[in-house]
Image (cartoon, rainbow, N blue to C red; front, side):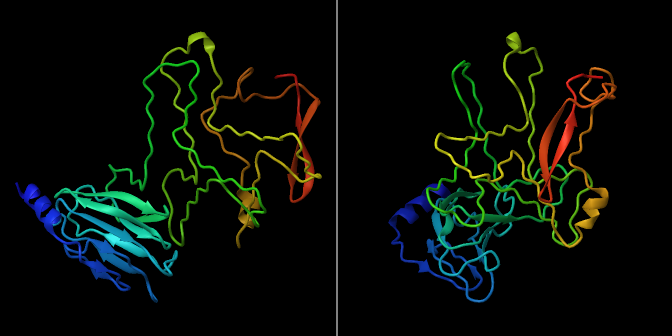
Amino acid sequence: MGLEQNNEQHYREVVDKFHDPSATYAMTTRDYVLRPTVVAAAIIITLPPVAEAKGRFYTILTRGVVTGTLTVTVADNDDSENWVADIAFDGPNQGGVFYSDGLKWVISPIGIQGVAFTSARTDAATVIRSSATSLTLTGASATNMAEAARFTLSSNVLVGVWANALVGVLNFNTVGYVTGLAGAICAELDLPAGAIPGGSGTYCCFEAELNFPTGFVGGGVPVSFFCLNVWGGTVAQFDDFGLLFDITGVTIATTHFMQVNTAGAATHALRCRVNGVLYYIMLTDTGA
């Protein structure tokens, strides 16, 4: 009954509470529309108590000089069900619609999708995620093509110094670390637990494609499947201890993926470039 009464109150009220805070601000249940900005420091917007705001919608959209350091962070009162992390907006025209069902804040993003989350959770049983996209297919098909997500950057003009359609960054700052494995991007392929009919398909963790359309004239510019850069003030440590790749789980034996070479001289080579100099990785077409 409380939810229905609050809905009726929300319906009959005139939405007259607009606010544009430029400093840290605690919302009331009547702050329906917020357009926060920053002046000289990052600010925090605290949502109303989730129980008091049940049945109500609130919009928060950033304005002005919001940046990666001058952020607008939206927090709850430590009262929302499954509130994983506070939400930090790092640019203008970023925000969301916040709806309270009395127990949990349900959030739908609006504006430019640039959102950062912070979390202080330490429970080992939880994987902390700021976003998850899942696609489950239930109809068998020999002609379907499927993608859980796609990021496309398209340009018909000079883009600038660099461009990426997708970026993964893992930043340990000053004293961050892990006790296991850390990777900026993780690719995992889980093969079926049963037989693949007819041995169909080709399976890989990474697929890379290069398209050279008709009319392309590169003029000798380097084009590669992988471009690897090492940099930083202590880059000499990579010279001493770095690896091109690190693979575990293989057994060295004749006819295996990893085997002792007894074939003798190389018959082929792959070209690569190190510090601007061309080198060739020797190969043989005769196995061990």
